[in-house]
Figure (spheres, rainbow, N blue to C red):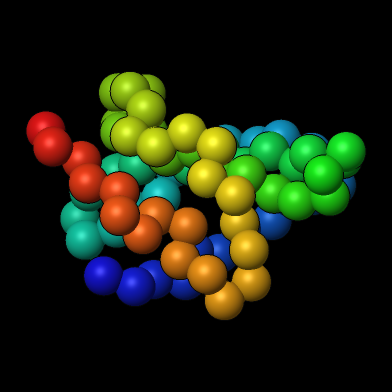
Length: 71
């Protein structure tokens, strides 16, 4: 699955948003790392249990390549 997820940081270095993908709710947390100059993404299920934590967001790279939720 490939999807563009609209997000607006509104000038904040960290925010969480609820996003529905293929009918399933996820919590996406975006963190700006000032020292490294990049964004990181944490994806959790609707109950807040992390599926992946700290995936670095890089242009033209799939941040979740190889990630499998075995639940």
